[in-house]
Amino acid sequence: MALAISSTIEPRLLLRRLPRVCLALGGDTADEMMDTAESLARDNPFLEFRLDYLKQPQSALTKIHRFLETHRYVTAIGTCRRAASGGKFKGSVAAQLEVLGKAQAAGCQIVDVEIESALRAKPEAIARLRSCAGLMVSFHDFRGTRHLEETLGKMLKVPADFYKIVGTATTLSDNVAMMKFVQTESDRHPLIGLCMGEQGIISRVLGVRAGSVFTFGAVNADLKTASGQVSAADLHGTYRIDQVDAATRIYGVAGDPIGHSLSPVIMNTALRRENVNAVYLPLHAKTLKDLIHCAREIPLHGLSITMPYKQAILPYLDNTDTHTAKIGACNTVVRGQDGKLYGFNTDIAGIVRPLEQRLAIEGAKVLVLGAGGAARAAVFGLKERGAEVWILNRTSVKAQKLARQAKAHSIPRAGLRKIAFDAIVNATPVGMGNKRECPLQDDEIQARVVFDMVYDPVETHLLQVARAKGIAVIPGIEMFVQQAARQFEIWTGKPAPAGDMLHAVVAALQERAAAQKQPKA
Ligand code: NAP
Picture 1: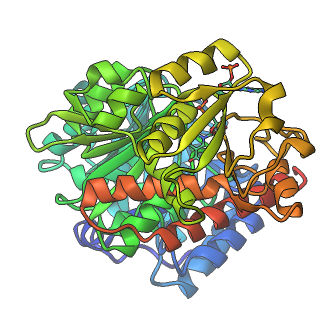
Picture 2: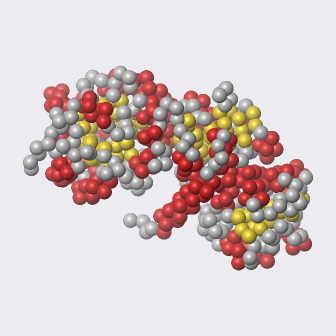
Picture 3: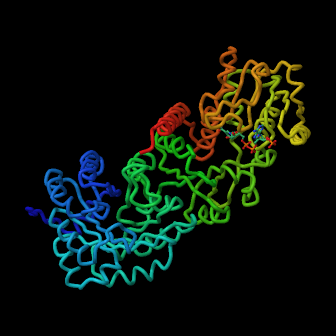
């Protein structure tokens, strides 16, 4: 094999021209790996070839050589991580270094050697690797984010061009620890610091702002080379990582679980459209204590609060608006310049805004199904606007209690046909998840407007029946957009681009539905 290319770029110069995201390439075969490289290199000129993913790592080297000769704008990292250090390569340290030496000769400008291998190898062998390419010494902790300074101290014994320290976030606060560490040490050493795991997304997006030289992105959600890796397309498109700087304000949606939330899509769309220097992240908070610590330390400028914390967050807030106090639930937090946390409830806006576009709320007769958090927002919001409200709930005592609190009526199911309602609002989860379930019988659906808070699927059975009867319908997606729009307004003081937000959510839901229909490989 003619391995003629060796790096002609000084590591110091390399550092200056490196993009913020390195696309990590796995694959079962060398051809698959190279096909992915070929198709994504134009948008991702910084690639990591994970040679340890291949049964025969050396089978890719000639192909990589050819690829790098024809894609001279690409910077490549060659990695062949040993199984003992969390990779897939089962060979010895000597065999690993041999692969990396050849990767370098094939044109990889940087090679990654785990600290475990670097310490076991002869110093001359490591020095040789570094003589014609940048050397990255790496360390991965698959259990937690611990002993960062001590680990770096050990790594610095091996002269290298980059030091990569990767922890695992078991709490949101682990990101705080990682970023503080990177902030302190990156002035003295070229560092890459981030946390793996679903809770590590903060460090993956904000690490570069703290001083990490770059971060890693996945090819897509199904082709990750590390847990919690975000796709490079999302890092660039959704989170706008290339624009994240010291002035970027940080927002997030906190809940448990949070993986399926559409809030990052909708809110980042709005921030980008209105040119707000801010980023909005999904925050998997396993405890509120952890979330609050993170909110103060990062610091976060605002939070969307979702299940199961809408009520539980109240004691942590310094003040709330009257809606939040009345409903007893908060879905929006603002961290003031004084560091205090202020709570709002924008679900009311999410209910009232779409309804008032279809009918005059004052004096309207409205039936609310359910007596949980969303129903409370509907009942209090509609009462405040002068509607007459009836509540029907599976557990009737809860309906009666809410009716007393809000000066509304509770109604038994048998009483439904006695009243001509202007609007019916479904605030139960019945119909969620593409089921054929409906909270009412067909002949009970009598009104001018039917509003279903359920938004996945977009067209629920309730809405289908109502539409067939010629009744105006409001899909839950409108509530989702309007409550988010109100959050956006509270945080930024700007009118929200509701049309763009709606398009973004519809597209995301369609994508999700299409992915669910795909047969699993
Ligand atoms: P919640 O506090 O848990 O309340 C759920 C309510 O639904 C309770 O009154 C419960 O009755 C009733 N319910 C649950 N399962 C039922 C069933 N199988 N049959 C009849 N009634 C049932 O939930 P929430 O936060 O109010 O949310 C309610 C729905 O609104 C969810 O589907 C949520 O996704 C949706 N939502 C949508 C938006 C949006 O932006 N579109 C925003 C907020 C909420 P019991 O009292 O008898 O348990």
